[in-house]
Length: 115
Image (cartoon, rainbow, N blue to C red; front, side):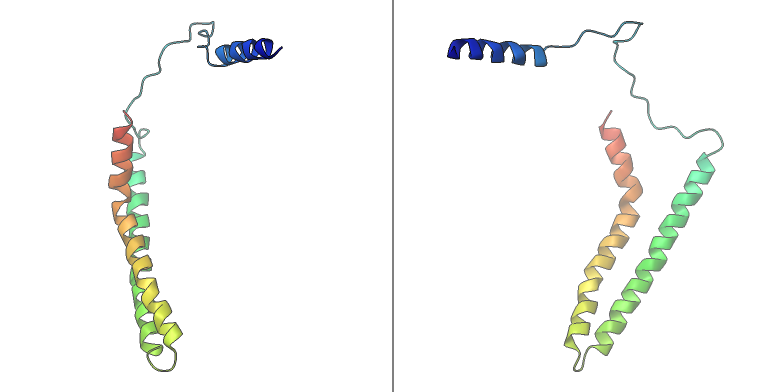
């Protein structure tokens, strides 16, 4: 009985991990991995959108640093919690600015590493 169960499990595992046959109808080959390519006429539009997003991140980062500074200045006396929150916000703002600045190179690196 135990041997019968072991044989059934072995057969089930062999069927589960066996390579599947190629589909009929001309398929079965490997797909090409082409490089990213913008549709005609959208190259400039995509660059504009990326530039606008980076500009928005720059404005948000400057405002974030100013707000953090204001919180630290107000919280200096008798509001140490506010000063601490302002100081704790600075690394988050810098991290956000860094990610926005490196977004395109990181995406390009990941896309080129997959090929």
